[in-house]
Image 1 (cartoon, rainbow, N blue to C red):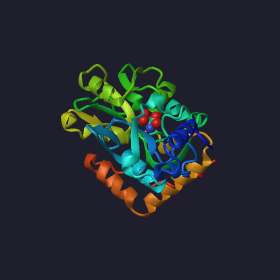
Image 2 (image 1 turned 120 degrees about the vertical axis):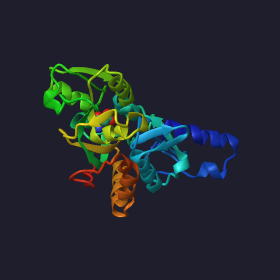
Image 3 (image 1 turned 90 degrees about the horizontal axis):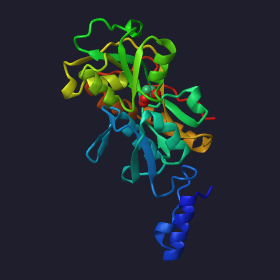
Image 4 (image 1 turned 180 degrees about the horizontal axis):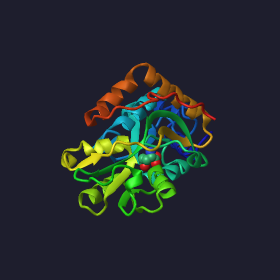
Length: 278
Ligand code: GLU
């Protein structure tokens, strides 16, 4: 498929001088928008251990998985453009072609599969609660009635609370870091999302001793790599890359390096076996 961008690139080449080396190569590995120009990859910018922007650097398990996958697709790390992908914007970022794929604690769900496709899972996490260190009453999701709970718009975490704990006073923000600020300032009583994300925050210097993860997960979050719906070719290539990352030991290294410092160890079912693409 020739995309508008590639067409534009082709005509720019023609206008310059036919035969320039830079104009010749076309990398068909991702099917369409990801040509030799590089890849646009959606990640979180504010989730320590997973996707974190620090100055001009990007760190975390999702960054490492994305970088590994991009490498297998023929794109070196310095040709990746990192795009912030807040939970509620992920499907539209993919649908509108603003990213080639998303690696952002993005759970595979049937509802999301109506709009996008997924490769993976590459990690299985679980929903949990984070409370202030001195909190004694909130011991699990069943103890949330009448409490102020923070989560993020467009997340499975918020959806689960709405479905299962309608009596809870749920406040939805755009990012989990906003929830962290609300928790420590006592504007909310708890924050709910994946245990991976909560462990990352709890281990941050500024939160140490101030918050604690409750530690009773109540869902299975299968992290996938989101891509354009129906792009089976790209899905298959990304799935192959995930499988080889697990097989060659890089997956374990990335998990240890990124989640280890927060004391997080992936639970049963990890490393997962990716689903077949369809
Ligand atoms: N994994 C869950 C989701 O995809 C929660 C974390 C997030 O919002 O990124 O909705």
